[in-house]
Amino acid sequence: DAKTTQPPSMDCAEGRAANLPCNHSTISGNEYVYWYRQIHSQGPQYIIHGLKNNETNEMASLIITEDRKSSTLILPHATLRDTAVYYCIVSSGGSNYKLTFGKGTLLTVNP
Amino acid sequence: SAVISQKPSRDICQRGTSLTIQCQVDSQVTMMFWYRQQPGQSLTLIATANQGSEATYESGFVIDKFPISRPNLTFSTLTVSNMSPEDSSIYLCSTRAEDTKGGQYFGPGTRLLVL
Image 1: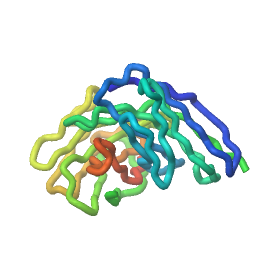
Image 2: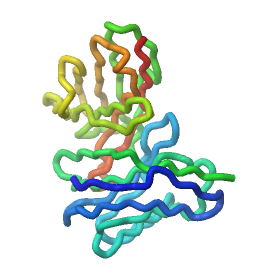
Image 3: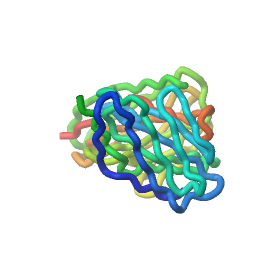
Image 4: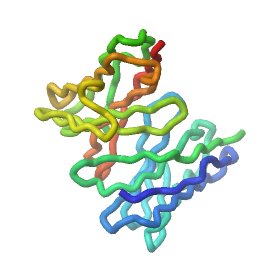
């Protein structure tokens, strides 16, 4: 599976949009981009995934560049409860369905 | 999405003892996974458990230390054997998420402290 690079930390003001970048320049054609978050002392929570088209759900939007070498997770109106470590993972979702977690980005939403 | 529960939620154990962690899913699932998260670190996959077959362990993890059972499609256990303080971690189970093209849903984790 392709490796991802994320900034170690980011800050965001409450009510503003949080834009979390992820670089995955070695992604291959059959690999999906997944985003998870882990709020302190809880299990990781699935947020969204995409292949090449932009995706939106009730939690967030995922913007994938045309060359698929990077993506951005957007939380449109961040709240204090969105403070968490956000993980960007690239995986083919193949028969082994393994997910390799990197260090992620610690997003701190400030009042 | 699947609802996953784990027991115990936390425990404090003495070195040399063993602890069995249970993972229960509210629906039948083909694949279950066990992860370890050491203090301040990210998640590391221990093994993949399919019902009716032996678990597949990742590099650095062995069956004698982390035996896994998968007796049916909704349940699995992970045993941490002959524990040492280095085994102090959060242990998480997860299931394949059929609606996410290869993603997973996670349980709340079991926080283990070994003295």
